[in-house]
Image (tube, rainbow, N blue to C red; front, side, top):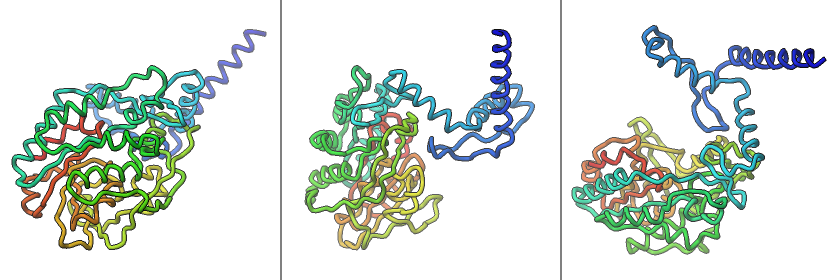
Length: 371
């Protein structure tokens, strides 16, 4: 009887494996995973040379993993199993308190960090206009009280102060601005970005540092545009049990025009892209997501021009700065390698700010393009 039971179980298991393999071969390949918010591997091209050096086998392994039938289900089951087993994290994302998912921050490479600060200093020497520098801490720093007990993560405050100590330009203290409002929803619970409220406090820091009128939160009425945002941390951890975030905007786009340059050619853009709310990554509601270059023009044509070297954190912050500048040029060095000094001169820029999320700045290898 036991032998018969073992045979049945073995046959069922083999049928299961065969079914999974057959489904993967018969079903069309998926190009994009909404759950993981990334493009999936497609079937690699075969050649004898690629086969001999092992490259084809490596790519084929990744392809089969990405295209396995029911991949989303297996990812969700893995997330649940990690959670139910008592583990504190999955894929580098902690299961935090208050239904918060928090990416672990590794200790940065000090050499790369200081090298990037040196590039900022070099830009300031050549720009001929005032340059400011700011690092936006992650929620692991601001919401450290939500981390699981004894969860290791880098001390961002110490590292940010080290970076500012090497800086020869005006430093912007985003850390204190966010920390002093840490009881408020300044970050998304399911995503690594700050919310529009967090960006409001960031913009207020900038405005006060530059002698501009500060921002009074009570003067703004937030408009909720979504209540179903499951961000990057949610995707990484496959934390399907976590409640989604809401997305809000505070500033109207009336009187503001946007031009984006996704492939070098000018295309009409928008401060807010409504269709992005139908996608997995609803943070792309702000400016339509990552752009190599975007130019925001206001009706205040008599005001100065700002160049912002930045990552995606600035996408939801620029609305709070639009009334203070005639033009805001958003320059993403990860995708735009135009000479920055020439750009400042050609576009008659009046002020420059280098503003990055901490995680991006300490790992970015594109800062050399500022010169």
